[in-house]
Length: 191
Image (tube, rainbow, N blue to C red):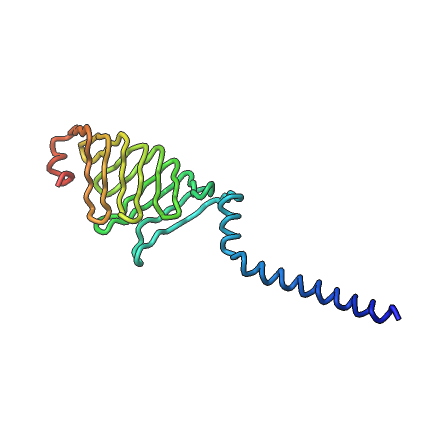
């Protein structure tokens, strides 16, 4: 007499437990989006390090810059590259090769470059300690003591602005020009 109600009671308990598990799993699936779980885990809990990286930034199919580095570490949402070799591609003219001790590449592809920066282009060489590159405006801004050297002349200043879209280099604030060869002004460097 007790066997029949106990069997039914056990079957009902098993059905309710299985139904509860299914209900919890399906509702959990809709409450939590997998993208937010992955992003929050990576951004807040995990730092990533890689060796020997190569990264190319494109905009509308055009190559803007090409970065190579011996190591990169992603810390607090920023990619720290050390040392870095970077080539910028202006809309007109030759590519611009840059070497520096350290750089920070943000997720929006802006770059902050620091330490022993040397930029070489066909007619000139640029040396400074701190630069910023804007991906959206395709420009380089230097707000530290800079030196630009070319054939027989040196220009020093406190800041500069290089618009890679137009190819225009603007040097300003405490500008000093030193000419070491009289023919330097005729060579086409200052056109």
